[in-house]
Length: 219
Image 1 (cartoon, rainbow, N blue to C red):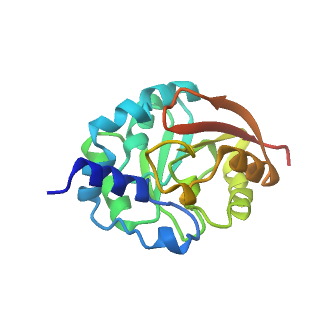
Image 2 (tube, rainbow, N blue to C red; image 1 turned 30 degrees about the vertical axis):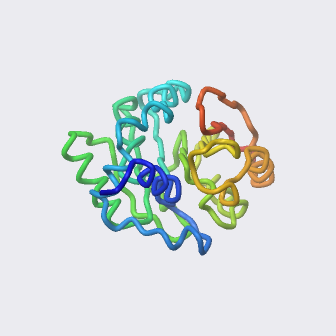
């Protein structure tokens, strides 16, 4: 039987599936073909205590008709919650793993969430069907390769004044990938500044993660 410690380690190594980018060799080794198995890990109720999904969504102050893209949606931990908060809008649950995309579509249908659209990402393209008010990446940024190039392109998927929210593991926490696989928040800020974003908010209430919100700079 897999132990809780092993489950947390598996979660930390995989975080959530990288949805839309060329990956490093390290992250490329992790596949998520059995969505039902990963759902028991990603959607473990114990995660709520440190991920604080309700507080995160409240902090984002989304309008009911917002268009949101959850990149690296995995099994839908955030996407399904976001859908309830944007009942007049739409949530694009984006993932690169076909089994995850299938799971997302089935989960949305089962829960009657017609405003959730599962999207199959390409290796370096989220393939968003429309521009978004908010793009969210939770525990995904540290998986992305060629980040400046990727996020520069991603600006085209944001509405004027749209936001990009990045949540990822701090360097100090005992959760998450090994320190060598993490990205410090100051590095995120520098990379995204070079990619054409401006930091607009920095939330401090997550115990194991930083929570940064950016706006795309004027083109």
